[in-house]
Image 1 (tube, rainbow, N blue to C red):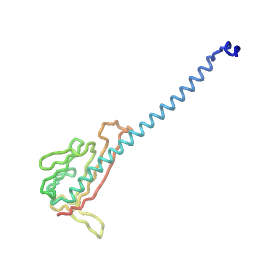
Image 2: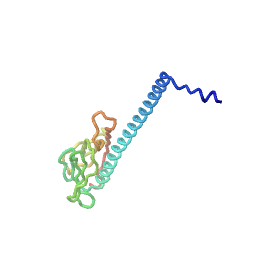
Image 3: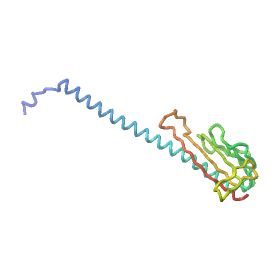
Image 4: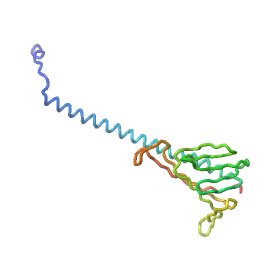
Length: 177
């Protein structure tokens, strides 16, 4: 026992360098795994955010349009005005990347990060050819196709994993016309 206590030889420089190199490789791998996990989380949460924003806005627009009593104006393919079941004039439009709903003179921002809103207006459905006839006249509209493309609300660089998009469509038949 006494002999072991007196023999206090240390590690050689080569052994220390090998241990340091192995430790550096292991720590590098741990950091890389942590970064990739964080990137996957951010990408997933941003994808969910964009899809949820599009889904909520599209659902609200669809419900209101189904119960509309009249389409009063279609100034462009990205804006429309209609009268809801309570006789209130409602307008949807995209302004500075935000989808806004104006009802009774009060504007409300529904969602941000809107890349595009496209409204296509149809007057009739032709059963024989399974096609719709487009129209530019507000009083002739019976079906509206809404295409909404959203992106992340927070700024993300081009090509970044955090930059996500969602595109959703809905066909709405106006019931109360």
